[in-house]
Length: 184
Ligand SMILES: C[S@@+](CC[C@H](N)C(=O)[O-])C[C@H]1O[C@@H](n2cnc3c(N)ncnc32)[C@H](O)[C@@H]1O
Image 1 (cartoon, helix red, strand yellow):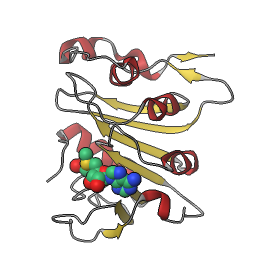
Image 2 (cartoon, rainbow, N blue to C red):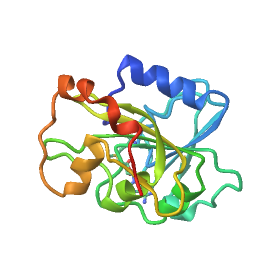
Image 3 (tube, rainbow, N blue to C red):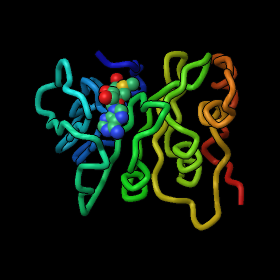
Image 4 (tube, protein in one colour):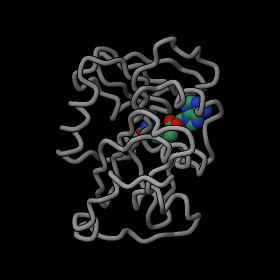
């Protein structure tokens, strides 16, 4: 079972981002979101044994801080990351060329820690696909020394430390500007 749910547009974006690349799915659970989707390899890491694992996917049963960081880390996928954090995650994020996040921080749900979202704000947002069940974010290269971007509503909710209601699909659709605003 996977915690999150991918909409059709999310699946399409995921496929275009991971095509031909090596993906590390950290805290993969049963790996439902870490399916190959055209990736050359998907390596799922989880401290617990999965119930099921999609075909063609590799699995490492371990805490992520006990896995050697690959020299050339390409894509990191975080699906519904735990809110208490994964020790060593920042080392993976700093090395990754692309970070894909899927999670929900509305209505009392929390996926990920404040440091995770503070870090994501320092990288260029390539895709932001909100949905009532969960949001897909794809971030690329760092924006540069001391530069952060405007948080998406999903990130703002996570950083607020409060219970934030889902703003509604129409509100999110009418305000598509989060990808471009950066704050020096
Ligand atoms: C909420 S589940 C999400 C699973 C999956 N990514 C999904 O989207 O359905 C969080 C997963 O993170 C794993 N996990 C938590 N801390 C971890 C750590 N430090 N190293 C590896 N796995 C960890 C848990 O075992 C659990 O399977």
